[in-house]
Length: 163
Image 1 (cartoon, helix red, strand yellow):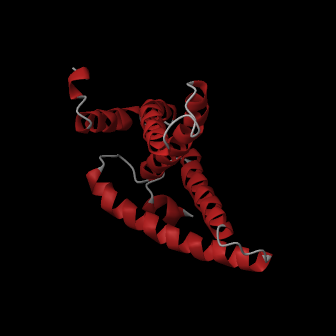
Image 2: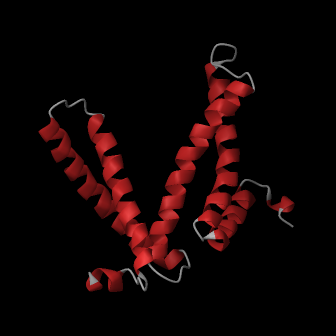
């Protein structure tokens, strides 16, 4: 356990919460992906979940190595916290976008399907920006996500609103 704590630069036991949450999220995502294959046998679902979890874990660890030098964080475990915020924000913006688009009266039936999806994506992006900063603040990474948000808004051509 000490080796794990040292490799992730964990100083206090409460910081272990983020690797545990990250691992549970990875296993749950793998389980959901395994169910997409339509396998009904429990043994095969568990085996496929474990295989997908291993593959995703290797991919995430690769991303950590690449992003550790790019993103300026004090400790390695903060990268897990950042990934958790990105995951929750992405899912939440889609979940929030559905009732908003219905409330606006936008449906596939009253609009061209192409225009519907463009509006759905625009609404999702708007809520993504708001949720990213809020959840970043909630998870103690406000400075990182505010800088990330400013960079993203500049890329959208909205940097003049930041000054």
